[in-house]
Length: 247
Image (cartoon, rainbow, N blue to C red):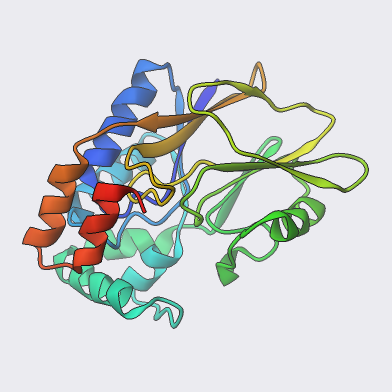
C-alpha cells in the first residue's frame, strides 16, 4: 500500500489540486492529511470540501493548530496576520466545516506509523520540531517506529539508532529513501500550501509500506494565481509574497 502524506495545505486550492493529481498519478492508494487546512490563503471552503470528501472515503485526517483556531479555540501563539486570516476564514466557513474541524483527532496510529500534526510527545501543545533536540525527544517517547508530522513547513527527515544519536537528512525530491527497520524515523513532508525553503513548489511525501521506501516530492503549481487570490481577498500581502518566493 502506498500512502500519500499531505500537510499544511493552508487554504491553497491550486497547490492541493496539483499534489492530489501527482499522488494519484504515482499510485497512491491511501491518503493521510496531517492538519492545517486553513489559514494564510484564500480557498478554505474548497480545501475543506475536498478533505471532507477524502475523509468520507477513509482518509486519515488530523487537526492542526490553525484548524483548531478556526474551529473556535483561541490560539495565543498565532501572530497578528495569522489571526486576521483565521477571522477572515471563519466568515467563509459553513457550520459543517466548523463541526468537521472540531471533530478531528490530534493523532492516529496505523501499524508502525504515528501520524500527528506537530509532535508525538504532546500533540495538543503544538510544539515545533525545530531540529535534532526536539526530534530526539519525539523518537525517544513515541512507540511507533515511524512518526509522520507537519507543522514545520520545510521537508526534513530525522533518524535514530541504538546509540540514541539523531541524524538529520535533507531529502532530495523524487529520490526514494529506505527506512531501515533497525532505526526509528521522523519524517516531515513539508507544506503543500506554503513552502518556506525558498522553493515555491508544493511539498508532500509518499510512503510504500511494502518496500519501506519514503519519497519526498516537489510539485510545481500555479503559485502566482494562488498569490493573486490572496491579494484579491484582502489578506496580508506577506502571505502572497511567501507563495511567490517560497519563503
